[in-house]
Image (cartoon, rainbow, N blue to C red; front, side, top):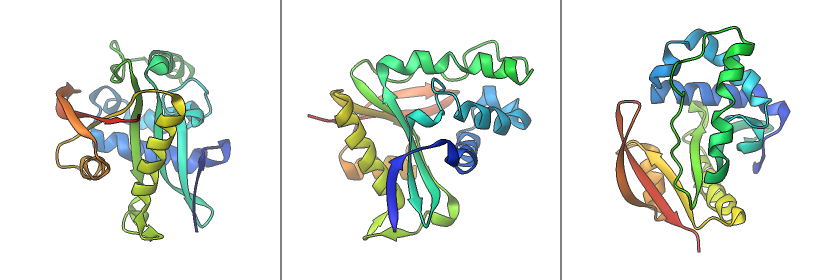
Length: 193
């Protein structure tokens, strides 16, 4: 039986690995150079409340007692405070931080921003009550955006990706093209009210 819930400290290992695999697929250039420290950085960062990939920003999809999917999101107003946590984490792990910010701000001012949504490989083709696990997470992200009081849910997707297809299925519309870390993305929005 599947359950959507807030992430907890207990989910650290499972969620950190999900985020690591997703960031590797995104090929974030500034992090790729520090790949050997990235898993440790994400695990330590997960325990920080004001880290982009910390547990307070995460919702997990739990199946048979294990977090098999995760969605990270937050209101635009807090994005800059979350990004400020990368440098202290690099210093704590005694790694030279990148000269530029790791992730550039992406959320528009009136958005609850869906930063990351992923399901582990073994669970990608499984359903619960005739919905894919990532569908449950995306529907929950819309619910979290609604609870935040923001006018829109926003997200950036690679054209043709599973997340782009999922967002289109839910009614998100493309508002602009973006270059993020030297790659083309579409910025999508979903009107909440």
